[in-house]
Image (cartoon, rainbow, N blue to C red; front, side, top):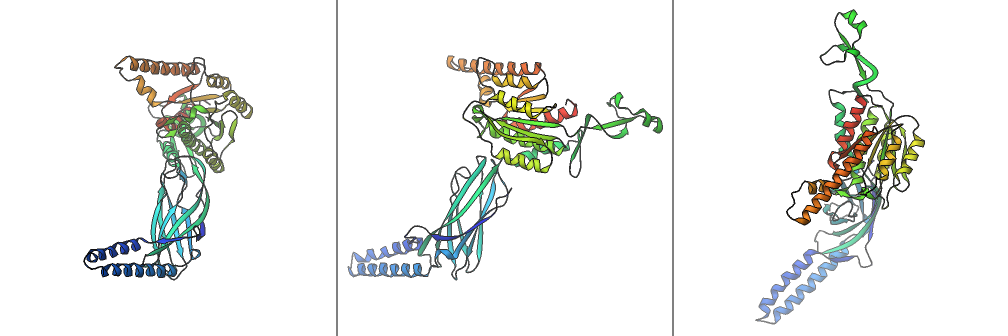
Length: 453
Protein backbone atom coordinates (compact mmCIF):
# COMPACT_ATOMS: atom_id res chain seq x y z
CA UNK A 1 0.00 0.00 0.00
CA UNK A 2 2.99 2.32 0.39
CA UNK A 3 3.96 4.01 -2.87
CA UNK A 4 7.29 2.80 -4.25
CA UNK A 5 10.16 5.33 -3.98
CA UNK A 6 11.10 7.14 -7.18
CA UNK A 7 14.48 8.66 -8.02
CA UNK A 8 15.64 10.97 -10.79
CA UNK A 9 18.57 13.13 -11.89
CA UNK A 10 18.38 16.89 -12.01
CA UNK A 11 18.34 18.83 -15.27
CA UNK A 12 18.66 22.58 -15.94
CA UNK A 13 15.53 24.62 -15.33
CA UNK A 14 14.89 26.85 -18.35
CA UNK A 15 17.63 28.17 -20.62
CA UNK A 16 19.24 30.56 -18.10
CA UNK A 17 19.16 28.31 -15.06
CA UNK A 18 21.18 30.50 -12.68
CA UNK A 19 20.75 33.56 -10.50
CA UNK A 20 22.34 35.62 -7.72
CA UNK A 21 22.58 34.14 -4.25
CA UNK A 22 21.38 35.96 -1.16
CA UNK A 23 24.97 36.80 -0.11
CA UNK A 24 25.51 38.62 -3.41
CA UNK A 25 22.80 41.12 -2.46
CA UNK A 26 24.16 41.33 1.07
CA UNK A 27 27.63 42.27 -0.20
CA UNK A 28 26.07 44.64 -2.74
CA UNK A 29 24.26 46.40 0.09
CA UNK A 30 27.49 46.63 2.06
CA UNK A 31 29.08 48.38 -0.92
CA UNK A 32 26.62 51.23 -0.55
CA UNK A 33 28.58 52.31 2.52
CA UNK A 34 31.02 53.96 0.08
CA UNK A 35 28.30 56.49 -0.76
CA UNK A 36 28.70 58.19 2.63
CA UNK A 37 32.31 59.44 2.11
CA UNK A 38 31.52 59.97 -1.58
CA UNK A 39 29.57 63.12 -0.58
CA UNK A 40 32.88 64.56 0.68
CA UNK A 41 35.24 63.13 -1.95
CA UNK A 42 33.99 61.88 -5.29
CA UNK A 43 36.84 59.40 -5.56
CA UNK A 44 35.11 57.17 -3.01
CA UNK A 45 32.40 56.58 -5.61
CA UNK A 46 35.04 54.94 -7.80
CA UNK A 47 35.81 52.65 -4.86
CA UNK A 48 32.16 51.61 -4.79
CA UNK A 49 32.27 50.85 -8.50
CA UNK A 50 35.45 48.82 -7.97
CA UNK A 51 33.71 46.94 -5.11
CA UNK A 52 30.78 46.11 -7.37
CA UNK A 53 33.14 44.93 -10.11
CA UNK A 54 34.98 42.60 -7.72
CA UNK A 55 31.65 41.30 -6.44
CA UNK A 56 30.51 40.56 -9.98
CA UNK A 57 33.78 38.73 -10.66
CA UNK A 58 33.32 36.72 -7.46
CA UNK A 59 29.80 35.83 -8.56
CA UNK A 60 31.07 34.61 -11.96
CA UNK A 61 33.79 32.54 -10.29
CA UNK A 62 31.33 31.01 -7.83
CA UNK A 63 28.90 30.26 -10.66
CA UNK A 64 31.68 28.62 -12.66
CA UNK A 65 32.62 26.43 -9.69
CA UNK A 66 29.09 25.12 -9.24
CA UNK A 67 28.67 21.61 -10.70
CA UNK A 68 26.22 20.90 -13.49
CA UNK A 69 22.72 19.78 -12.40
CA UNK A 70 23.14 16.19 -13.61
CA UNK A 71 25.48 15.38 -10.70
CA UNK A 72 22.52 15.79 -8.33
CA UNK A 73 19.76 13.23 -7.81
CA UNK A 74 16.64 13.34 -5.69
CA UNK A 75 14.53 10.51 -4.32
CA UNK A 76 10.99 10.87 -3.00
CA UNK A 77 9.63 8.18 -0.66
CA UNK A 78 6.74 7.70 1.74
CA UNK A 79 6.89 6.10 5.17
CA UNK A 80 3.26 4.95 5.36
CA UNK A 81 0.14 4.63 3.22
CA UNK A 82 -1.62 7.92 2.53
CA UNK A 83 -5.08 8.08 4.08
CA UNK A 84 -7.85 10.67 3.98
CA UNK A 85 -7.51 13.38 6.68
CA UNK A 86 -4.55 11.57 8.26
CA UNK A 87 -1.18 13.29 8.55
CA UNK A 88 1.50 11.27 6.75
CA UNK A 89 5.20 11.84 6.18
CA UNK A 90 7.15 11.98 2.96
CA UNK A 91 10.90 12.30 2.57
CA UNK A 92 13.21 13.83 -0.02
CA UNK A 93 16.73 12.37 -0.24
CA UNK A 94 19.40 14.34 -2.10
CA UNK A 95 22.43 12.56 -3.56
CA UNK A 96 25.48 14.68 -4.39
CA UNK A 97 27.97 13.06 -6.79
CA UNK A 98 30.14 16.18 -7.14
CA UNK A 99 33.29 17.16 -5.24
CA UNK A 100 31.79 20.29 -3.67
CA UNK A 101 29.54 20.90 -0.70
CA UNK A 102 26.16 22.08 -1.90
CA UNK A 103 23.37 23.96 -0.13
CA UNK A 104 20.00 22.92 -1.54
CA UNK A 105 16.63 24.70 -1.55
CA UNK A 106 13.91 22.27 -2.66
CA UNK A 107 10.24 22.75 -3.48
CA UNK A 108 8.15 19.62 -4.05
CA UNK A 109 5.27 20.66 -6.33
CA UNK A 110 2.53 18.68 -4.59
CA UNK A 111 -1.13 19.25 -5.53
CA UNK A 112 -3.34 21.23 -3.18
CA UNK A 113 -5.37 18.12 -2.31
CA UNK A 114 -2.30 16.79 -0.46
CA UNK A 115 -1.07 20.00 1.11
CA UNK A 116 -2.29 23.60 1.08
CA UNK A 117 1.19 24.92 0.16
CA UNK A 118 4.08 23.02 -1.47
CA UNK A 119 6.77 22.06 1.07
CA UNK A 120 9.92 24.20 0.92
CA UNK A 121 12.92 22.26 2.19
CA UNK A 122 16.57 23.10 2.83
CA UNK A 123 19.54 20.82 3.31
CA UNK A 124 23.33 20.72 2.99
CA UNK A 125 24.92 17.78 1.17
CA UNK A 126 28.59 16.88 1.54
CA UNK A 127 30.74 15.91 -1.49
CA UNK A 128 29.88 12.38 -2.59
CA UNK A 129 27.27 12.09 0.17
CA UNK A 130 23.55 12.32 0.63
CA UNK A 131 21.09 14.02 2.98
CA UNK A 132 17.43 13.53 3.80
CA UNK A 133 14.63 15.76 5.01
CA UNK A 134 10.97 15.11 5.70
CA UNK A 135 7.67 16.95 5.37
CA UNK A 136 4.07 16.15 6.23
CA UNK A 137 0.94 15.97 4.10
CA UNK A 138 -2.72 15.62 5.03
CA UNK A 139 -4.80 14.44 2.05
CA UNK A 140 -8.23 16.00 1.57
CA UNK A 141 -9.43 13.81 -1.27
CA UNK A 142 -9.52 10.07 -1.87
CA UNK A 143 -8.42 8.39 -5.09
CA UNK A 144 -5.31 8.47 -7.26
CA UNK A 145 -3.23 11.64 -7.38
CA UNK A 146 -0.32 12.28 -9.72
CA UNK A 147 2.76 14.07 -8.39
CA UNK A 148 5.55 14.95 -10.78
CA UNK A 149 8.31 17.53 -10.51
CA UNK A 150 10.56 18.78 -7.74
CA UNK A 151 12.19 22.19 -8.20
CA UNK A 152 15.70 22.74 -6.94
CA UNK A 153 18.00 25.69 -6.32
CA UNK A 154 21.56 24.96 -5.12
CA UNK A 155 24.51 27.05 -4.00
CA UNK A 156 28.20 26.46 -3.37
CA UNK A 157 30.23 27.09 -0.25
CA UNK A 158 30.36 30.89 -0.80
CA UNK A 159 26.62 31.09 -1.59
CA UNK A 160 27.06 34.05 -3.95
CA UNK A 161 25.69 32.34 -7.07
CA UNK A 162 23.14 29.59 -7.46
CA UNK A 163 21.81 27.34 -10.17
CA UNK A 164 18.23 26.26 -10.84
CA UNK A 165 17.27 22.72 -11.69
CA UNK A 166 14.23 20.48 -11.89
CA UNK A 167 13.90 16.77 -11.18
CA UNK A 168 11.16 14.62 -12.68
CA UNK A 169 9.80 12.30 -9.96
CA UNK A 170 6.49 11.00 -11.36
CA UNK A 171 4.41 9.02 -8.87
CA UNK A 172 0.82 7.80 -8.75
CA UNK A 173 -0.29 8.09 -5.13
CA UNK A 174 -3.39 6.30 -3.89
CA UNK A 175 -5.24 8.09 -1.11
CA UNK A 176 -7.07 5.47 0.94
CA UNK A 177 -9.98 5.95 3.33
CA UNK A 178 -9.18 6.68 6.95
CA UNK A 179 -7.36 3.43 7.79
CA UNK A 180 -6.58 4.54 11.32
CA UNK A 181 -10.25 5.14 12.07
CA UNK A 182 -11.04 1.61 10.89
CA UNK A 183 -8.34 0.25 13.18
CA UNK A 184 -9.79 2.16 16.12
CA UNK A 185 -13.23 0.76 15.43
CA UNK A 186 -11.79 -2.76 15.40
CA UNK A 187 -11.22 -2.34 19.14
CA UNK A 188 -14.87 -3.34 19.49
CA UNK A 189 -13.71 -6.85 18.65
CA UNK A 190 -12.11 -7.20 22.06
CA UNK A 191 -15.13 -6.35 24.17
CA UNK A 192 -15.02 -8.89 26.96
CA UNK A 193 -18.71 -9.73 26.94
CA UNK A 194 -18.76 -10.73 23.29
CA UNK A 195 -15.29 -11.55 22.00
CA UNK A 196 -12.36 -13.83 22.77
CA UNK A 197 -9.54 -12.60 20.59
CA UNK A 198 -7.46 -15.31 18.95
CA UNK A 199 -4.24 -15.12 17.00
CA UNK A 200 -5.62 -14.82 13.47
CA UNK A 201 -9.36 -14.46 13.84
CA UNK A 202 -12.01 -13.44 16.34
CA UNK A 203 -14.69 -15.61 17.89
CA UNK A 204 -17.70 -13.85 19.30
CA UNK A 205 -19.70 -15.48 22.09
CA UNK A 206 -23.35 -14.61 21.97
CA UNK A 207 -26.73 -16.02 21.12
CA UNK A 208 -25.63 -17.96 18.03
CA UNK A 209 -26.22 -21.67 17.70
CA UNK A 210 -22.69 -22.85 16.92
CA UNK A 211 -21.45 -24.73 20.00
CA UNK A 212 -18.22 -23.30 21.46
CA UNK A 213 -17.55 -24.63 24.99
CA UNK A 214 -18.97 -25.47 28.43
CA UNK A 215 -18.68 -23.52 31.67
CA UNK A 216 -20.28 -23.45 35.09
CA UNK A 217 -23.74 -21.88 35.26
CA UNK A 218 -23.83 -18.18 36.14
CA UNK A 219 -26.71 -15.93 37.17
CA UNK A 220 -28.53 -14.63 34.13
CA UNK A 221 -27.75 -17.61 31.86
CA UNK A 222 -30.64 -18.93 29.81
CA UNK A 223 -32.11 -22.13 31.32
CA UNK A 224 -32.46 -23.47 27.79
CA UNK A 225 -28.68 -23.41 27.42
CA UNK A 226 -28.07 -25.71 30.40
CA UNK A 227 -26.37 -28.97 29.37
CA UNK A 228 -28.13 -31.55 31.52
CA UNK A 229 -25.84 -34.44 30.62
CA UNK A 230 -22.77 -32.49 31.73
CA UNK A 231 -24.68 -31.30 34.80
CA UNK A 232 -25.44 -34.91 35.78
CA UNK A 233 -21.80 -35.93 35.39
CA UNK A 234 -20.39 -32.99 37.37
CA UNK A 235 -23.12 -32.66 39.96
CA UNK A 236 -23.58 -28.92 39.31
CA UNK A 237 -25.25 -26.80 36.64
CA UNK A 238 -23.22 -26.45 33.43
CA UNK A 239 -24.07 -24.01 30.65
CA UNK A 240 -23.35 -24.40 26.94
CA UNK A 241 -21.61 -21.43 25.30
CA UNK A 242 -22.16 -20.65 21.67
CA UNK A 243 -20.23 -18.62 19.15
CA UNK A 244 -21.77 -16.59 16.40
CA UNK A 245 -22.12 -18.38 13.10
CA UNK A 246 -19.48 -17.60 10.53
CA UNK A 247 -19.56 -17.55 6.76
CA UNK A 248 -22.62 -15.35 6.74
CA UNK A 249 -22.89 -12.76 4.01
CA UNK A 250 -22.71 -9.01 4.55
CA UNK A 251 -23.37 -6.58 1.71
CA UNK A 252 -22.41 -2.92 2.10
CA UNK A 253 -24.38 -0.71 -0.28
CA UNK A 254 -23.03 2.83 -0.79
CA UNK A 255 -25.03 5.61 -2.37
CA UNK A 256 -22.59 7.83 -4.31
CA UNK A 257 -25.19 10.14 -5.82
CA UNK A 258 -25.74 13.87 -5.57
CA UNK A 259 -26.96 13.90 -1.97
CA UNK A 260 -23.70 12.38 -0.73
CA UNK A 261 -21.74 15.42 -1.94
CA UNK A 262 -22.89 17.49 1.05
CA UNK A 263 -20.00 18.30 3.36
CA UNK A 264 -19.99 17.68 7.10
CA UNK A 265 -16.95 18.45 9.26
CA UNK A 266 -14.73 19.25 6.22
CA UNK A 267 -15.50 15.91 4.53
CA UNK A 268 -18.28 14.88 2.20
CA UNK A 269 -20.97 12.52 3.44
CA UNK A 270 -19.56 9.90 1.09
CA UNK A 271 -16.15 10.23 2.75
CA UNK A 272 -17.74 9.54 6.13
CA UNK A 273 -19.67 6.63 4.64
CA UNK A 274 -16.52 5.15 3.09
CA UNK A 275 -14.62 5.36 6.38
CA UNK A 276 -17.48 3.65 8.21
CA UNK A 277 -17.79 0.99 5.50
CA UNK A 278 -14.09 0.19 5.84
CA UNK A 279 -14.40 -0.16 9.62
CA UNK A 280 -17.41 -2.46 9.27
CA UNK A 281 -15.82 -4.49 6.47
CA UNK A 282 -12.67 -5.04 8.50
CA UNK A 283 -14.61 -6.23 11.55
CA UNK A 284 -16.87 -8.50 9.51
CA UNK A 285 -13.96 -10.09 7.64
CA UNK A 286 -12.07 -10.68 10.90
CA UNK A 287 -15.08 -12.52 12.32
CA UNK A 288 -15.11 -14.88 9.32
CA UNK A 289 -18.07 -13.47 7.38
CA UNK A 290 -18.18 -12.89 3.65
CA UNK A 291 -18.32 -9.20 2.75
CA UNK A 292 -19.40 -7.68 -0.55
CA UNK A 293 -19.61 -4.08 -1.75
CA UNK A 294 -22.00 -2.35 -4.12
CA UNK A 295 -21.47 1.36 -4.91
CA UNK A 296 -23.95 3.01 -7.24
CA UNK A 297 -25.12 6.33 -8.61
CA UNK A 298 -26.96 6.56 -11.94
CA UNK A 299 -25.35 3.22 -12.70
CA UNK A 300 -23.35 0.61 -10.82
CA UNK A 301 -20.02 2.26 -10.07
CA UNK A 302 -18.19 -0.51 -8.18
CA UNK A 303 -19.08 -4.06 -7.25
CA UNK A 304 -17.10 -6.62 -5.23
CA UNK A 305 -18.53 -10.14 -4.84
CA UNK A 306 -19.05 -11.30 -1.27
CA UNK A 307 -15.91 -13.20 -0.25
CA UNK A 308 -13.75 -13.50 2.86
CA UNK A 309 -10.04 -13.47 3.64
CA UNK A 310 -7.19 -10.98 3.75
CA UNK A 311 -7.15 -10.58 -0.04
CA UNK A 312 -10.79 -9.47 0.13
CA UNK A 313 -9.88 -6.76 2.65
CA UNK A 314 -7.15 -5.47 0.33
CA UNK A 315 -9.54 -5.38 -2.63
CA UNK A 316 -12.14 -3.74 -0.41
CA UNK A 317 -9.70 -1.02 0.57
CA UNK A 318 -8.52 -0.39 -2.99
CA UNK A 319 -12.09 -0.10 -4.24
CA UNK A 320 -13.20 2.26 -1.51
CA UNK A 321 -10.26 4.54 -2.33
CA UNK A 322 -11.51 5.03 -5.90
CA UNK A 323 -15.18 5.78 -5.14
CA UNK A 324 -16.27 9.38 -5.77
CA UNK A 325 -19.52 11.33 -5.65
CA UNK A 326 -21.66 11.78 -8.74
CA UNK A 327 -23.41 15.01 -9.68
CA UNK A 328 -26.63 13.19 -10.61
CA UNK A 329 -29.36 11.61 -8.53
CA UNK A 330 -28.72 7.93 -7.75
CA UNK A 331 -30.84 5.14 -9.25
CA UNK A 332 -31.77 3.19 -6.10
CA UNK A 333 -34.01 0.67 -7.88
CA UNK A 334 -31.13 -0.27 -10.17
CA UNK A 335 -28.97 -1.01 -7.12
CA UNK A 336 -31.72 -3.23 -5.65
CA UNK A 337 -32.09 -5.15 -8.90
CA UNK A 338 -28.34 -5.77 -9.08
CA UNK A 339 -28.19 -6.89 -5.46
CA UNK A 340 -31.15 -9.25 -5.85
CA UNK A 341 -29.43 -10.88 -8.82
CA UNK A 342 -26.10 -11.20 -6.99
CA UNK A 343 -27.41 -12.42 -3.64
CA UNK A 344 -30.11 -15.10 -3.69
CA UNK A 345 -29.74 -16.27 -0.09
CA UNK A 346 -30.62 -14.23 2.99
CA UNK A 347 -27.92 -11.76 4.02
CA UNK A 348 -27.36 -8.56 5.96
CA UNK A 349 -27.55 -5.50 3.72
CA UNK A 350 -26.01 -2.37 5.23
CA UNK A 351 -27.30 0.52 3.13
CA UNK A 352 -25.66 3.94 3.70
CA UNK A 353 -27.45 6.82 2.01
CA UNK A 354 -29.29 10.10 2.56
CA UNK A 355 -32.90 11.19 2.05
CA UNK A 356 -34.04 13.78 -0.46
CA UNK A 357 -36.27 16.50 0.95
CA UNK A 358 -39.33 16.04 -1.29
CA UNK A 359 -43.06 15.93 -0.63
CA UNK A 360 -43.27 12.40 -2.03
CA UNK A 361 -41.78 9.23 -0.57
CA UNK A 362 -38.12 9.07 -1.66
CA UNK A 363 -37.29 6.32 -4.10
CA UNK A 364 -34.61 4.94 -1.79
CA UNK A 365 -37.29 4.08 0.83
CA UNK A 366 -39.29 2.12 -1.74
CA UNK A 367 -36.12 0.42 -3.01
CA UNK A 368 -35.05 -0.66 0.47
CA UNK A 369 -38.52 -2.07 1.14
CA UNK A 370 -38.12 -4.43 -1.84
CA UNK A 371 -35.18 -6.11 -0.11
CA UNK A 372 -36.97 -6.81 3.16
CA UNK A 373 -38.81 -10.04 2.21
CA UNK A 374 -35.47 -11.76 1.51
CA UNK A 375 -32.76 -9.85 3.43
CA UNK A 376 -32.18 -8.14 6.74
CA UNK A 377 -31.62 -4.46 5.96
CA UNK A 378 -29.69 -2.05 8.17
CA UNK A 379 -30.69 1.27 6.61
CA UNK A 380 -28.44 4.14 7.73
CA UNK A 381 -29.08 7.78 6.90
CA UNK A 382 -26.31 10.32 7.52
CA UNK A 383 -27.68 13.23 9.52
CA UNK A 384 -27.05 16.93 9.03
CA UNK A 385 -25.79 18.59 12.27
CA UNK A 386 -26.71 22.13 11.18
CA UNK A 387 -30.30 21.02 10.56
CA UNK A 388 -30.71 19.76 14.12
CA UNK A 389 -28.95 22.84 15.48
CA UNK A 390 -31.43 25.06 13.64
CA UNK A 391 -34.38 23.00 14.86
CA UNK A 392 -33.22 23.30 18.48
CA UNK A 393 -32.67 27.06 18.30
CA UNK A 394 -35.03 29.49 20.01
CA UNK A 395 -36.31 31.94 17.36
CA UNK A 396 -36.01 35.64 18.09
CA UNK A 397 -37.96 37.02 15.14
CA UNK A 398 -40.40 35.94 12.46
CA UNK A 399 -37.70 35.00 9.94
CA UNK A 400 -35.94 32.70 12.41
CA UNK A 401 -39.27 31.21 13.43
CA UNK A 402 -39.91 30.09 9.84
CA UNK A 403 -36.41 28.60 9.63
CA UNK A 404 -36.82 26.70 12.90
CA UNK A 405 -40.26 25.43 11.89
CA UNK A 406 -38.96 24.24 8.51
CA UNK A 407 -36.04 22.42 10.14
CA UNK A 408 -38.32 20.74 12.67
CA UNK A 409 -40.69 19.66 9.92
CA UNK A 410 -37.83 18.16 7.88
CA UNK A 411 -36.52 16.23 10.88
CA UNK A 412 -40.02 14.97 11.72
CA UNK A 413 -40.55 13.82 8.15
CA UNK A 414 -37.24 11.94 8.11
CA UNK A 415 -38.20 10.20 11.34
CA UNK A 416 -41.56 9.16 9.85
CA UNK A 417 -39.85 7.69 6.77
CA UNK A 418 -37.44 5.69 8.92
CA UNK A 419 -40.30 4.54 11.14
CA UNK A 420 -42.10 3.24 8.06
CA UNK A 421 -39.09 1.10 7.20
CA UNK A 422 -38.94 -0.22 10.77
CA UNK A 423 -42.56 -1.27 10.53
CA UNK A 424 -41.63 -3.47 7.57
CA UNK A 425 -38.77 -5.11 9.50
CA UNK A 426 -35.76 -2.97 8.60
CA UNK A 427 -33.26 -1.64 11.10
CA UNK A 428 -33.44 2.03 10.16
CA UNK A 429 -31.38 4.67 11.96
CA UNK A 430 -30.07 8.19 11.42
CA UNK A 431 -26.49 8.81 12.53
CA UNK A 432 -24.25 11.83 12.74
CA UNK A 433 -21.07 11.65 10.69
CA UNK A 434 -18.81 11.21 13.73
CA UNK A 435 -20.95 8.39 15.10
CA UNK A 436 -21.40 6.50 11.84
CA UNK A 437 -18.56 3.98 12.15
CA UNK A 438 -19.24 3.04 15.81
CA UNK A 439 -22.96 2.70 15.05
CA UNK A 440 -22.34 0.32 12.13
CA UNK A 441 -19.91 -1.85 14.08
CA UNK A 442 -22.12 -2.00 17.16
CA UNK A 443 -25.23 -2.74 15.10
CA UNK A 444 -23.43 -5.52 13.23
CA UNK A 445 -22.19 -7.12 16.46
CA UNK A 446 -25.64 -6.88 18.00
CA UNK A 447 -27.22 -8.53 14.96
CA UNK A 448 -24.67 -11.33 15.20
CA UNK A 449 -25.21 -11.69 18.94
CA UNK A 450 -28.99 -11.99 18.56
CA UNK A 451 -28.63 -14.36 15.61
CA UNK A 452 -31.01 -12.24 13.51
CA UNK A 453 -29.57 -13.61 10.28
